[in-house]
Image 1 (cartoon, one colour):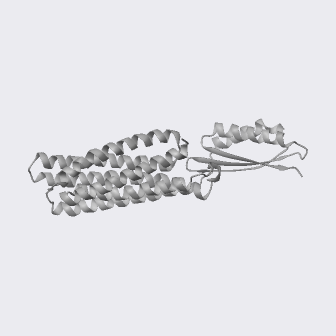
Image 2 (cartoon, rainbow, N blue to C red):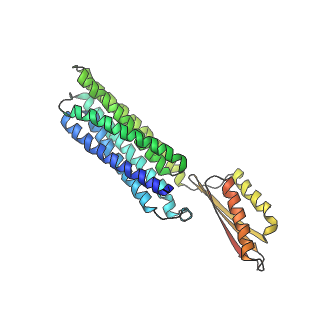
Image 3 (cartoon, rainbow, N blue to C red):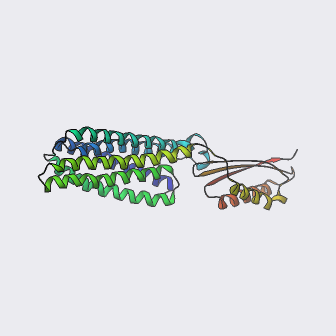
Length: 293
């Protein structure tokens, strides 16, 4: 299976796990009166929106060659990551608000929802932990910002499941008023952790969405390959280059003698392109040939 298909498959699995998590958390929160489960349900709803956005982004890229992603669709993953970061930050705000509101009037947890929550924490924690591991493995193969984002989303979901289980276990083990404050404290910790991850997404995607010029070391590599092939082309016209996130886009314009065969020209173009792309990680090189007038 290809890299793009693997990205889409993992995003689809993440979508189903987030949907299951939301359903289970809502049912447990309604029947248990747990602030932590209410916060978890809000977080799960935003995780579901994030997973849906990631899956739709990969579906839109289906069948599209990487060379066509320089503009427009090429920004899609970065913009989607930025939006997911904003959703994550919004979820953290909801969680913190609910925790502060409940701090003045803590309510005891009760009902079958406590057991539902514990079972859900186990099932969802295992599922999200497995997806977290799979996204880590996939990130080594793919430089996709959305894969890195989905990895963070699953990390939030996995650790949230662990955190939610703490007050539920305390409620079953101890019949004391301080357990109510454990519920609120865990909610605050989940909110702070979610806010921290959301801020990292926003900070990285904001820098990636803005194109930047190449640094001198990368420009030197381009010049080195042009000098190496200097005698094989007639005239050097110009180079246009920029970075966009982890990608480097380079356009080189060369002129050849009109009598040079197409095969010889193509050999030169391929040599320059392959050489630069092998030396500059994440580079996409386009060499354009024209005839000397």
